Length: 343
Picture 1: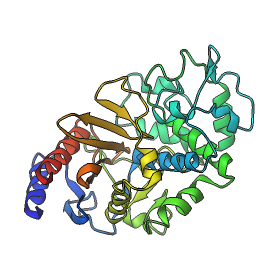
Picture 2 (picture 1 turned 90 degrees about the horizontal axis):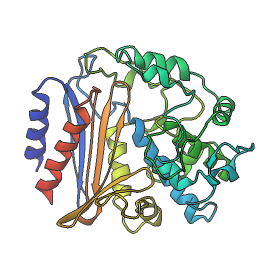
Picture 3 (picture 1 turned 45 degrees about the horizontal axis):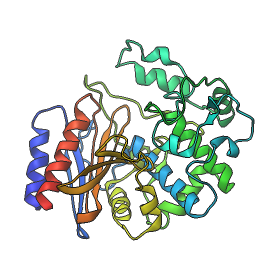
Picture 4 (picture 1 turned 180 degrees about the vertical axis):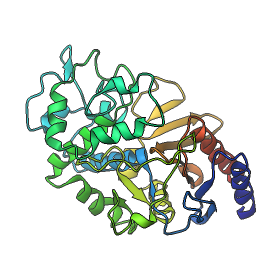
């Protein structure tokens, strides 16, 4: 198996677009891991390398919501406004409010990001866009977030239409702070990182750990910046190592854990056939094969993919230091090849 995984990784690196990979595979409790290629600093990735996992952070946020549900502090179909400090009559359409189910399935109708500047995504210069986004978001506060939330105008009933929303994920993170009366980062640390001994997983990068952060490239080979530091980070603020993400995969494969069961529940009620959503997880069901639960993450200069197959106790996590329109497809295909080989 080691040779097969190594050869598949080498094959992916030969096309030149992807220049480095870190990959972890879990199968029936056995762990396989590899670091391949070169980072932008010319060195090989290793166990100390820190990566931005971007939207995989949302699955941590979904795990916190699962805990809150089990703690009977909140219900999936609760009106999210019940947990906000101000009145938001605008966060409903035809009398139907935004619920937590809507937030974790990206059907809330909230904008992609706050501050909401849709014009920057119209015919953008992709080499400059990350810098524009960072300029908008650096130091963005919770107070500013709540102000932006007042400006939202929903154009349809929540739950009706998919529209990817980082703002929705941050609204969930903020709501969880209000529910537990603790900062989001502290909740993640207390309920996920410390129990799993994920001792090299952080929010943002301090000067102490900056030397370990992998810098990435966009599709044009231009070095991209890390994301801006801001107050709400539930949508994509986590940086981690391969070893820690393997621990996270092992946690997600524990099908007897009620929190895991809750975060993997199917929320779309068969609306899209074989495709389902969990709490910020995507789920693909195939009658001939075990169910696959997956999610991807894309920072300005990194791309990652995580697939777990609870029935066969298999997990694959892959991360690379390049972002581009085809990169996630390639990582997904690599994960599928490995899963099919070990099943």
